[in-house]
Amino acid sequence: QSALTQPPSASGSPGQSVTISCTGTSGDVGGYHYVSWYQQHPGKAPKLMIYEVTKRPSGVPDRFSGSKSGNTASLTVSGLQAEDEADYYCSSYAGSINFEVFGGGTKLTVL
Amino acid sequence: QVQLQESGPGLVKPSQTLSLTCAVSGDSISDGAYYWSWIRQHPGKGLEWMGYIYYTGSAYYNPSLKSRVTISVDTSKNQFSLTLSSVTAADTAVYYCARKVAAPSKFDYWGQGTLVTVSS
Figure 1 (cartoon, rainbow over the protein chains, first blue to last red):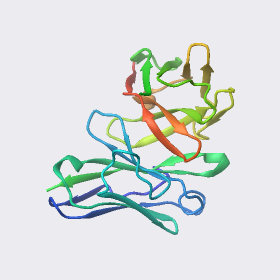
Figure 2: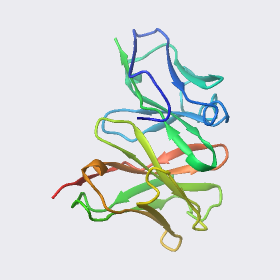
Figure 3: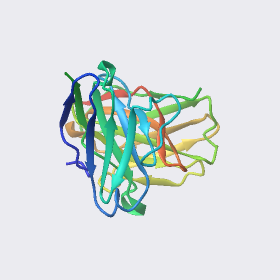
Figure 4: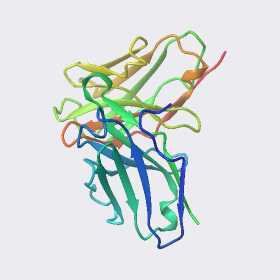
């Protein structure tokens, strides 16, 4: 059982927007501004898409955005494209005992 | 361009010790801005952080694995290693090494991953 809770699946049609949630506790998501999101295509390594809740690394399209409210972080993908179909994982710093925790992942399907 | 490359046996017998090495190129492992990490992914499952190490040798582990995991660093070879003792079939997974930026916090570079199967 993963420390952070994500919905197992999400879907949307091309051009639409989809939001994926990531729920933790005050000891991780709610307590720190250190939530990241990773995209993973089949057979590939995860790729950083969002860090520190809202920041995008260079090269990541601005269609990807992040937010947080309380113990829940969210990733929104706007203007869905076929290549966005992948698994998405959230992670959070979780303090000096647990350090880092991941969500169980969400499979995003572009219909 | 920073690159990380995992290496090690793809098959380990139950009760034995799993050992993997991650070679880092394009960056010095002694750069104090990073923690060098191991993350694994069971087949068809999510990601699990195992631990990371600072270039000084200070290591931090997932509490659920702490009794079996050791991460070490060799700055002269610009690489770091993972050992996992007393493995069982439940340790079958793809093992990734990754670079974690201390601030801002993020795992920004990952190796391609290596599948380790635990089987007799």
